[in-house]
Image 1 (cartoon, rainbow, N blue to C red):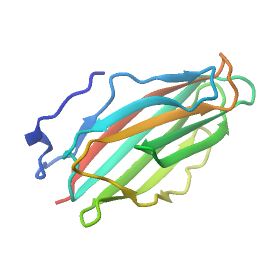
Image 2 (image 1 turned 180 degrees about the horizontal axis):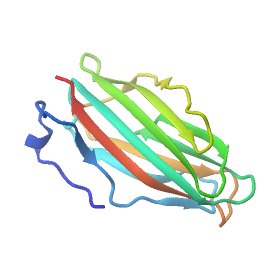
Image 3 (image 1 turned 30 degrees about the horizontal axis):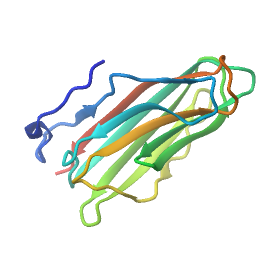
Length: 172
């Protein structure tokens, strides 16, 4: 699926409908390493997020192959700041884990306030977590990343990012 670039007038402050601003064309897998590995990146262009905007992020990862009791973790980051984490879990073949983040830009301080949900196959839905306020410079590009990490390096351990979507919605 290719990324679509939006013209400035399409991202204006008076959009009537939500707009999916980015869906990366390349989604990656992490395998045979214990290093935290970037699975997907979305860059929000400078000036594309304004007050009052809501931002909604969805990331879904699948573990099609696993080794024994090795654990996997998934993180959603804004720059180097972690917005949400699916903590290390004993992944089984074909498990699915997800992160959903919804936040709003505060005009006075350029802060992102948000709530994150995360979970995985066979687990009760996690209690929503209120994220700490995160500095969000609306005049600069913002980089969102999803990373994955295994506890043990094994060729049998595979985690693949299947969905990474970012939606902006004006609130006026």
